[in-house]
Every structure is written in structure tokens, then in C-alpha cells.
Amino acid sequence: MITPAETLLLLVDVQGKLAQSVFQPETLVANISKLLRASTILELPIVVTEQYPKGLGCTQESLMELLPGNIPVEKKTFSCCGTPEFMKQLRSFNRNNILVVGIETHVCVYQTSVDLLEFGYGVHLVTDAVSSRTEANKQLGIRCIERAGAFLTSTEMALFELLRVAEGERFKAISKIVKE
Image (cartoon, rainbow, N blue to C red; front, top):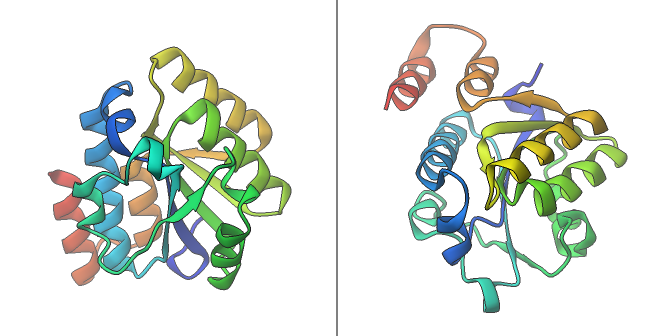
């Protein structure tokens, strides 16, 4: 089970035109947006990466607006873990569970998830907050990540697991986000 004290949200490469060319881009962005807003309420650290932003563009503006002061980690490796700055930032938060969202499921999300598992992290793939250019590649990526040892979850499932109880201001705020 994930808890706010042990969990970090990782947003992988939701950038430029690629973010609009993936399978169900509106659903992807809407679910990531919910997770970002809820993570702020739950005080989860958020790490954002960008794959070669000079060529692929920056993180989608609507998402960056929810991340004031967050500076994405630039990378050229498919796995985020292949970038020393990412590993430094990740380790600085001292969190054992990583909620993984982003694109593309079968490339950067897959390779990052496998590497995180090898480093001993608990990987929780948010299946309705990842995508690829084709549905087939999205589904293949999800299956391979699960076979590697990750837990599968959804936006709503993860948020209510983090909350644990149906009371209080956090519950009210996150329930409102989930219902949007």
C-alpha cells in the first residue's frame, strides 16, 4: 500500500506535439492533472522529466501550470535512471514508492519502471495516466511493466489508497478533483 510519507509522483516526458499524438491524449492529460493537483494536497514530491526538449518541446503547459517552481530534469536516455541529475533528485526525496505517469508507455515509461524496480523502488504504474502513440504499444508496455514486478493502479485507485479514510479536508478536496 502506498502512503503520502513514502510516495513520489514521477511525470515522464509529456511534451510538445508527442503529447497530442498519443492514444487518448485528453484522458492522459486530464488524469495527470488530477494526480498533480492531488499530489499538492497530499504533499507528495513531484519529479518531472523531459526527453531532449530542444527537439521534442517542453512539458505541456497546462501541466506545468500546476507545478510552480518545478524545473524538469532534461534527459537523453530513454530511462530516466540513466540521467545522473534525475537519480540525484529522486534519491533526495527519500521515498520508496514511485507513482509513474507519462509517455511513451513502451519506451521511456517502460525502461524507467524496470530500472526503478532494479534499484529496489516500489513502482506503481498509473495505467490511465500513461500512453503511447498506439493503443497496442500502450497495452504492451503496461503488460511488460507488470511482468517486471510493478503494481498496476489507476488515478482514482491511487488517490483513495493514499487517502485511506473518507473524512477531513484532504478527502473533500481530492473527492472534488476525482469527480471532475
